[in-house]
Amino acid sequence: MTSFVLGNLPFPGQGGDQVVSKAVSTAIAALFKRTGKLEATVRAEPVAKLLQGSVDGFDFVGHSMLMYNGLRIKAMELFVQAVSLDFGAIFKGQIRLKQPTQASMRVVLTEDDLTTSFNTPFVVEKLQRMEFEGQALHFSNTEMNLNDDRTVSLTSQVRIGSSSAAPQFVSLTARVEVYDRTKLAFVDVSCGGTDTDVALGEAIVAHVNALLDLDSFALDGTQLRIDKIRMRNKEMIFYGVAHINQFPKKK
Image: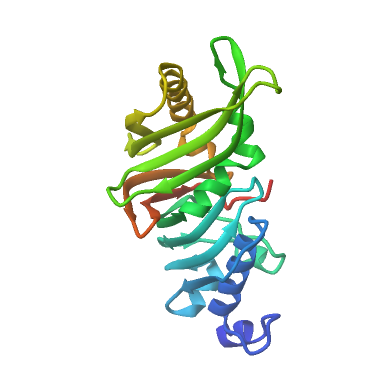
């Protein structure tokens, strides 16, 4: 009976695990505006467990991913623990979890990813919510660099107040730390320039740190917890856990 059901899935020549793997890959790809190579591999032994929606776990690897808010990710790896799926929903192009699960994750961002992300309307709008000396700020040409000593450098042109005001050049260097697994922060900050430039840089860092709550960047139905950050070869690599209460839906 099992071979009859799994042998007549609506994907000729594919087993049940391949069908679910393809469905998961497609569902994850739909969460992003653009992706490179994506691959999800479902583990189920015996495969007949899929009829009850029982999966031993699945591994997901994605490259060159662009989120709808403009944020870029070079690579993402998820290794999901045993999970229970609504098998019938697979054939409707949906992934439904019968119960929450979690996945270990690895996320890689490059210098270009970070620079692009800091110049998206999504991030610029958040930056421009702050004021300095009672005046609005306008950011442009923000650039992020990852240094060999494992610090990050941020430069930006910032206009204070009027759109016709001459921009000030902000330059700062800092380390990135994670606190309580839920927040990222620039620490040990060094700002260059005049006293006004330094004060502006310090105010920007305080504002950025207040924004770097991981839950504000997570997809619906998920929570992100970061355990470690590494920097090498001009890449910032995050290691942690994703708690998945329900499969995310595209906003």
